[in-house]
Image (cartoon, rainbow, N blue to C red; front, side):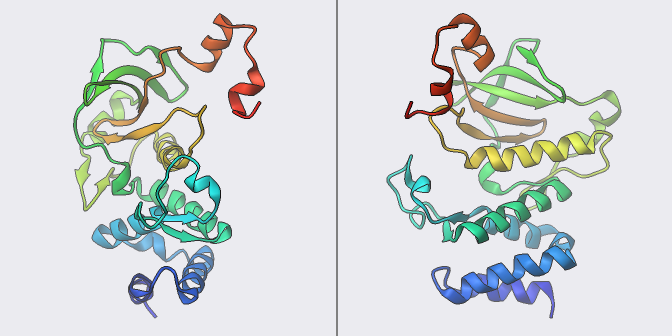
Length: 233
């Protein structure tokens, strides 16, 4: 039984059916042992990645910051356990292939401001920028001269694909995993995710005029620090 046949059967099922949930769980469980999903390429890989990106758990937290149902948002609602399996698989596949779901990609309109980053991190630099007339923060993966030519080879493969080898492949894999998780986080005190550019590799988020959390606390030492992470306190 080929992986293509299994996926076609899964895609054809009604997501609200119990059979769909069983098939999806079985697919995730089998792949933990056989790792056949990572062999997909091209349009088949892009379709699987976009499919897994739509799987979300059914609970009130999903609707906490939106009035729409998961179905109205194009999501595939499922149980917490299966949703976690799909998220873990999505991260693993995207890191392995250095690819992302199409919903994560910002294809154009991002402009950096200034000649130097506003902050430096371990593997990335933070820049001030603009997107659609709004100020944004740009986290740009730092690349060495040795791998710059490889990153310039980013190409469109029914989605965005960054071909190996890269000298800092572990850093780029971590970058892709971070983008997958960040897009799903919804909390009043977590900076909203905007998208990812692939040439160069950057994560774009909303601009925070008060700076980083450390900078804000330094300027406001009496602030309720617990309240910064728990909106109910």
